[in-house]
Image 1 (tube, helix red, strand yellow):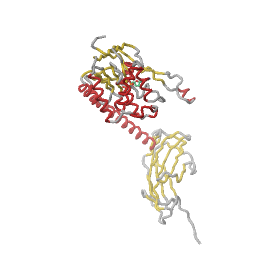
Image 2 (cartoon, protein in one colour):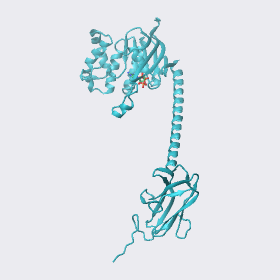
Image 3 (cartoon, rainbow, N blue to C red):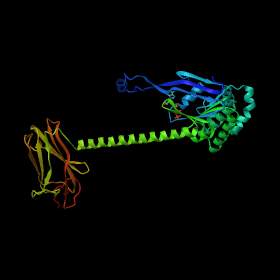
Image 4 (cartoon, helix red, strand yellow):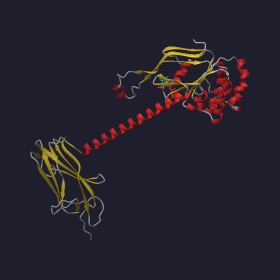
Length: 410
Ligand SMILES: Nc1ncnc2c1ncn2[C@@H]1O[C@H](COP(=O)(O)OP(=O)(O)OP(=O)(O)O)[C@@H](O)[C@H]1O
């Protein structure tokens, strides 16, 4: 190891097993029985860097890029699959909030156990106890169990211990985000102070400004490798630019997906409105009034005729023509078919026209639409045409409901 260096990381790689859920239900278990139980996800792939004694370095990168994993390996909470890590001196760390604290022990008792983990003797801790408590600003709370602490109080205690154990190397993970502005400022001053005393510091943070204030270099971790190492301002500029580009690309992809989904939806709606095997296809639908004139309005108890011209490309026989009349709100008000009306199955062997006369239409004032279908053998849809025709019925009497009933009053 180079004498000038406090940390040397050489060619380390780290993968995690990501376990799949095969499901809880029998159906899921049967469907996914072949699914591998886990996938090896490479988080860090052959990364190397070194940190000089007394240097402060920031680790930046987007969520999940492996910053915390790197710190955990430096702290020896976890180990790399490949590569080596060398550290010169005593390491102190502030990783997950309150890690290493026992919830049922008081703040004071936790100071002893925590500082002992960092390698301090009982005598050394006794000497520093007042300073640690004072820095934590916990006052009389120091004798309460730490499970009763707020996250800010937890963090203040953890920070006070970590910076008072005379470590040569201090590793800090996003911890400064917790705590109020005053305490953050105080922590920052303290970090500057211990840095001035020669402590090597690595900070993981999304607060790039914090890193720029205290660090000489930044390491940008991206997709498992180191993308850039250099002066924080330069690295952060490139990092933010790349993030912005990724964001734009993601937005463009989302927009594309949205357009594709809308097109798909439009196709589906068009199919729902009209589809078939088209041996015969309706060309135009007309509604005629009692005088045989084309209209879209009839009066209650008047006759109306539905004309359905169709083109035949391939003759087809035994076809049932079905007519459904709906009120505009979707209520089916009448259903009939060539079979129900007595005409029976029809032969569509050449282009022609169907004509259906409805006598004395009983509907009251509203808007209606007609669905028409040609169906063979009960389920072969030759033509399904929804809302093939719309019309209005007007009742001169202003009655309500669905159908008009002739009635006599005495
Ligand atoms: N013990 C674990 N088991 C499985 N996967 C893990 C484990 N620890 C971390 N990972 C995965 O490794 C990747 C890197 O995690 P890490 O916590 O190092 O990211 P990070 O860069 O610190 O992210 P953030 O900015 O969100 O804190 C993530 O995809 C995470 O899900």
